[in-house]
Length: 416
Length: 92
Image (cartoon, rainbow over all chains, first blue to last red; front, side, top):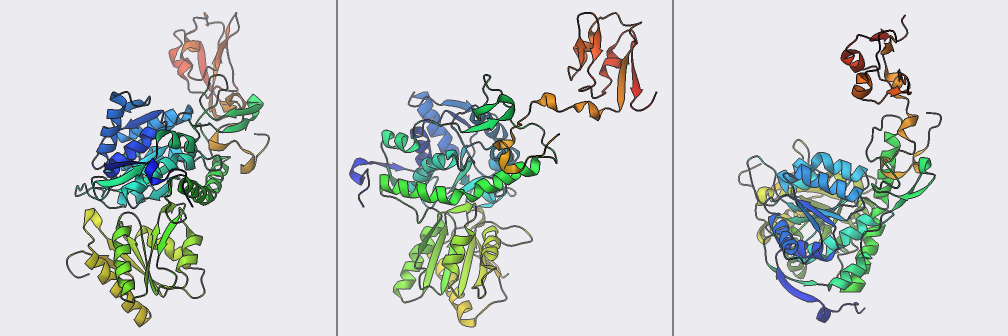
């Protein structure tokens, strides 16, 4: 199918992942950006403040004094009906934590770029997913991208997903620190007018019926139709309000699938079904699941091994929240062994996606053997030979029919 | 509250569907302020200091709206004439 904007009508730019996000925000008619710089997210804020200084955007840029304030300012802005964006990483995201829950509970469609970085201590500026996993229960949609092109595409899509009347939840776009944020890549951007049309122009505020006003009103701070955001809500109604958030999450996958397809019609690019992206899974004995940029390495190793006749496949999980239980059960059910790669660990437990996939497969009568690989903490490199060794280990587990060693560590020095 | 709504029938985002006036916070009160009008000079300091706007002026005198007075006792503390006394609810 020919896309509406073929490659010849797109703009080719050599940018790093952070700049790709900044350009996406520039094109997305964002009213307010409130941000505080932190490595490796800094370039997003730097680049965007250049657009502001040059008068290339009309956005109100608020250089706040902390990430807690950055998210608070976005909450305030979004509550007035503005389209709001911020970006952070690691400890900055941890400082936002309290307000992350408030943004989601107030159903404010804020978009946040998380440039994944390890949490302190010891202090480390390089990539892992422990920052993102700290916010997994906050009520945000979480998407993980594989490359800078996808970071650009997904940032624009995130506004559409967040603002969809069926959703109305904030979206975190995760891109791996340094591997993506600071690595130059050729990406293709759509013209401004294409992005604007895709987003339907400025943010449209949803409406709700309010008894004491006796009518449907836009859910925003407006003196003409006064509403209270976030007042006391005790045991009499808090539970009901949480039910609405739970239900809203259920509607997210369908919207992400639809937006992924629409983007494909526009740009010629799509990422699996928007939820997971697979390679070689149809006849695979061993399937590895992974989030983020490592998927590129794992896929290239899988390709090489398949050429040598080894039955291996890969599933990249693009949507982590809501978690794609049904999609993963469907794609993993016939594998003999599933290796789950996690770039984070819940201390005293397993990696976060291992626990979820274990739950996804629990209702199968005959289920694959699951092995959890913790990898890449603090930015530790995962070269192809290491990934190949992991596949070989998993093929051995398939041959043996099981393993007692369910939690493994890829690329750490010393015996476990 | 006179009714309990199920979750599908509530406005989203925790927005209240009733005005705060309908929440009678006076029932939180343990101590009730009582004005001795023989001492009160209508200086309005209690009206000024009341954090709940539960002390009102009717044009002739101040009075306390017990629907919203939480019984914090600030009015008693601020009254320069000792004209307000905190009385236990259910007592006297």
